[in-house]
Length: 543
Image 1 (tube, rainbow, N blue to C red):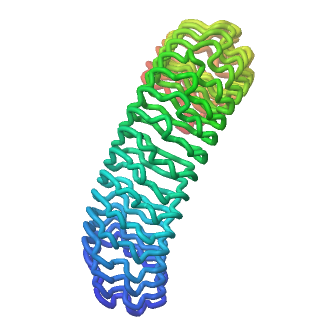
Image 2 (spheres, rainbow, N blue to C red):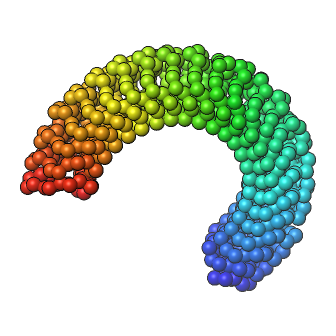
């Protein structure tokens, strides 16, 4: 269908929903919807409509939902929405609108949601939203707006969600958000804001979420968040902030989530997070922090998640996490420049479940390093420079389920290093320099499901190396230097489903080597110089 002509739907006076989306419509006659007084929902999205006749929706007095998104509209004629006094939802997104007449929406007094995102609007007249007291959601995302007139939202006393992200705003006038006393969510991300000096948020007493990420803020005045006691989420990520004033968050007593990652902070003042007694999540990743000597987290007694990854920290003071007894979810320290971590640094984090120290320059781990972490479930030490491990380093981590040593420099493992890790389900040792393994290295790991020892320098596997691994389902041994395997090497792995021994130096496999592995479904022998003997495969393999 390329066009809808007059009287096309004249016999459908009781129709409540009409979907004309994706029909390649290029035009609609002025009288096409005449007499359709029962229509509640009309979808004209994803066509190639370039314009509308004035008053074409005049008869649709009961229409509640109108979707005209994803067309080629550049403008809207005066009076286009006349007669739509029942309309609650209007979607004009993904068109090519460059401007809107001042009275475009005047007749839509019951409209609840208006979406004008992804157009080419460069400006909006000051009275465009006049009389729209029922509006609760307004989306202006991804236009080309450079500024807003003061008081232009004055009539939107019930507006709860305002999205002005991905425009070209460079500043916010002090009166910009006047009248928005019901606003709970404001998205200003992806603009070109350089400062917030005018305190534009003073009247937003009920604001719950504020997103100012991906702008060009170089500074924020100390009073900018004053009075915002309802705020629970604040996103300042990916700006150009080099420092933040002490006490800047002092009045945000209900703030729960704060993102300041992706800036240029080099240090944190002792008073920076004062007043944030409700904070549960703090993201400081991708800054340029070199130390945390001022103990900036001392007042964050309810913090559950802390991300300081991708900074330039070279050391941690022994007391830096002492007050963070509520830290439970995650402590991310990966990809800093840590060469050493003091014993007992984490001793007060008795509720912490995940710790990531990957991507640093650690060469060794002290025996007391993980003291106090009795609730830890996941420990990531990948991409460091560890050459050896102390036998008792992990003795206190009895609940640990995941342990990752990928891409270190380990040449051997102490005999009893994993003996207390009875809950361990996933052990990653690939991309090290392991030359040999002790016979009982994994003996106590009865709950281990996945074991990765690939990409090492193993030439042989000792007798009984896999004894005790009664839960193991996946074993990766590829890319070592194995020349032979004992006939009973896999006999204890009764639950094994996936085995990869590819890219080794095996020339033959013992007869019946897989006899006990009845659940094996995937076996990889790629790039091996194997000569297969009868009865090597005595079980059905699915692949």
